[in-house]
Length: 288
Image (cartoon, rainbow, N blue to C red; front, side, top):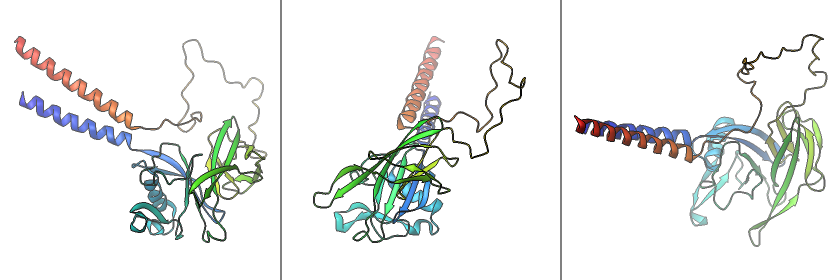
């Protein structure tokens, strides 16, 4: 019986560790803008700790030329030990950090601000904030086929009350974040409906970018030729399902985040199985 209990404990620990590993992983998309010039556009960053602070660290490791030397973050004694980011992308200024279309990170601070799979994170930095402050631009994208409606919102900080208000980011250029090709301009409501570029990355005003999933518009002259008469793919015979798409050819769509609930469910299910096994073993032994 002791061997069975020991085995149950070991299996439980393995299941807990597996559940934790499954839960703590997410890929987010990071943009860094300095003085209105995009240095990093909607680049994928995978983290095992689901916080903005962890994203900043991994983004520097993966994309900044000086690695983590470009980042200074941690409890600041001059601000009651509040977690502060005082240097980002090599610039010794406090950046705006915007997750999706939410208010800039601050409450909670970056070390406690949770992120999830697919989040869009914008880091906006000014080298001279007193004379040329950074713009905190939040982006949202609504995809319809090969078009996307981008909504750009500017968060404005009141330094007297330290509260934010919002304005539509109007009359801002919308462009392909990789090629720089113009896609349009935001209207009075901060909106613009544009064709999704091949890069899948759309920037607004030089301060923000977003990764957009959808059917990218083909480049001029790259339209797929129409099939010749009689070359249409035959319909599958009854009972013959259509073949599965090749890897990478799956239809685009939102990915499902791995959450802590996944790990919890796995752990609970494992515990139930182990308990049932132990009870069944004991009953079988008693029957003998």
